[in-house]
Image (tube, rainbow, N blue to C red; front, side, top):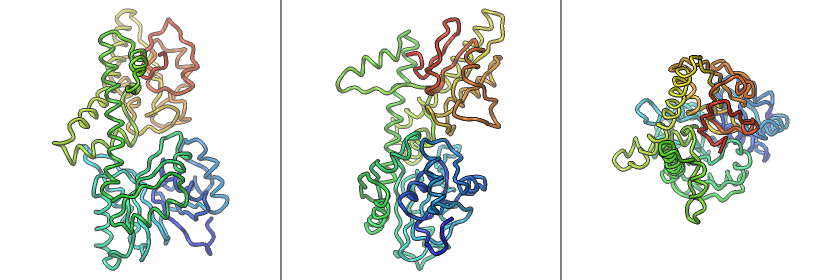
Length: 406
């Protein structure tokens, strides 16, 4: 518990995949941090010094800062010197950004704000969201106009390596005015070793969307290439390896689509606001979404052919649910989508595998070795490290969407 005689240095609204590691890492540098989450189970878990997500090195870090009294979790915020919004920003049915969580967190903080406080949004947001939240604050508290510092600083971390990257990655920090930018830089300098690049809020917001859209475009090229190679009966993995021998070519690896809360979502924020201009970004997003359907169709067609040729009900092992290797995050996961389609549209018995999740109320999970042994058809959807240990059985039909057998 944070001692009553010690003020809270910062409140982090949201204790998810980014909020909890950031709050814990800041606390490890001696800052007194209050993490706020709407989920009572999350709050109770963190206050026990435990974690509710899988991320290397995070468990020991959280335990250490909770025991030392530098990190505490709560359902409601309290007065502090700085406030950080680290909540989800999903998209709606029309692919427009849903900033309702950012708005709700901001409204919760408004009564606690005072002169000279720092207010920062880290949640990935459409351009001008920071200015909209500033307007919301000033509408409720007009006396604070130009009296608090408001900025945007997007996270820039890789799941599975979050703790290291929180400390060493450069950060882009944009305030609604130069004074806000500088104030935010001063705070991040307390725990970030990477270079802190100053800009304005709109540029910082667009920078985050641009980074993930760029990745999406590059992945779309690899995914499109994989579908072309399937048609041409070419080994796409060999092709990419050979093409990458060119000194100025760096093609990424294809997969079953693109998932996660960033790359699979952020490009739509640009497309929805600038539909006439964002042609390549839109087409790439559609290609990566289609790749998941293409994978599902391949599995379903293989099941039907197996049943037709053998007269037996096929057993399919869907290997992996997470949106990328060696994590437990299922958000926007193409593997999860593919598995759902195979379950609902095939006559096969489907064995669902995700080694990074111990228990799940939605999925009846099977051990990966057991699933491989029992299945006739193996669908490699995510390149988890344990999967590479499985020796190939030539009697099984293997559909490799992530390069396990390359």
